[in-house]
Length: 181
Image 1: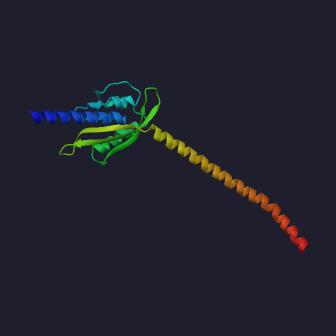
Image 2: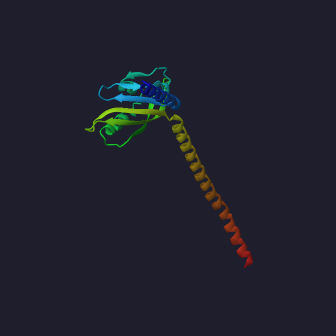
Image 3: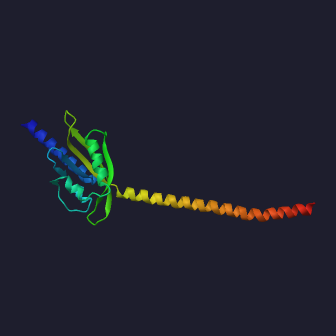
C-alpha cells in the first residue's frame, strides 16, 4: 500500500513538473496519434496564436486551417519525409495565422515513435514562437544592406573627390615645373 502511494505521489509530482515546464516555456505542445489521426493540442498551442482555447483533441485539419498557404506544401513534405525515416530529426520553421490576421513564425520540433517495422505510430512535439527572431533578422539584414550602400556611396564620393582634387593639382604641378625651368 505504501509503495503504491509513493508511486502515485511520484507520478503526481512528475505530471505537475511537466505541466509547469510546458506552461513556463509558452511552447505549444502537440501529440499526433498516427493510428487514429487524432492530435492533442495544448492550451498554449493555440494560445500563442491569440485563441482562448483549452487543450483539446482534434486533427491535423486544425493545424492546416492556420498554416500559411505558401508554407503548407513544404511543411507536409518535410513531415512525410521525416515519418518515412528519410530525415533523422524533425525541426522546421513556418508561419501560422494569428487570430488578429497577422502571421507569426514558429519553430516546430518533434520526435516520432516507431514500431519494430519502422512505421511511425505517434509524433510528439512543440511549437515555439520565433517571430521576434525573424523580425530581428529582417531588421539586421535591412541595416546591413543600408550600411553596404552607405559604404559604396562613401567609396564613390572619395573616388570622385580624389579625381576632382588630382586634376587641378596636376595642372598646378605642371605650371610649377614650367616656372622652375
